[in-house]
Amino acid sequence: APALVSYTGGGTSFVLARVLETITQHRLIEPGQRVLVGLSGGPDSCALLLALRTLSERLKCEVSAMCIDHGMRAESAGEAAAVARMCEDLGVACQVKRVDVRSHRAAHVSWQDAARRARLGALEEAATKHGCEVVALGHNAEDQAETLLFRIVRGTGIKGLAGIPYRRGVFVRPLLDVRRAQIEKFISRRGVKPIRDPSNENAKFARARVRHEWM
Image (cartoon, rainbow, N blue to C red; front, top):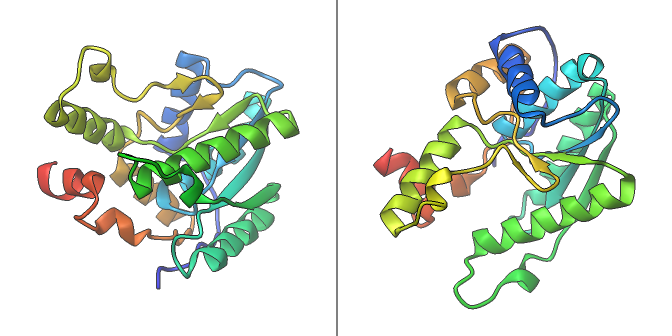
């Protein structure tokens, strides 16, 4: 079973500076806004929560979190509970919501795509309900590169070559200029043991093949 998330420390780092620079340059978060972090418990979303929680006073924003339980693995409920405990330790309000991934399945829609649609829908709904102007997601620089490569191989037009945007509607991605190795170092130095989703290593999923074979 994957290690459950825990939190034991804090500090400053390169990642904080880069996240602040990205937020400022692209105006992702304005003073006075409420920010909802999509928190899976994985390395990226844990780093995002820690960074935004640390920077919240400087950004003059209010940070809360939401963990989506996709119910696709036996461990998911326990992992969501562990994520909620980490937020409690950080003093961050956290909601846990179970979603019905099956209802988002359709012809030519994979399980992973259905999970993504269910997750984003639940996050956007929660943001509206609780008055959050921004939903922060944990995509990083390697996610950007993998997305571009995948689209090129599959076939894409000019629009697809734009890659993952820093902002799309209510969703923002403050980690998009931070590399995965930097994220791992950031959370390790703060005593975080993230959840490792085994699907990220499973070559039957296209994204995992791109990450571990093509990249």
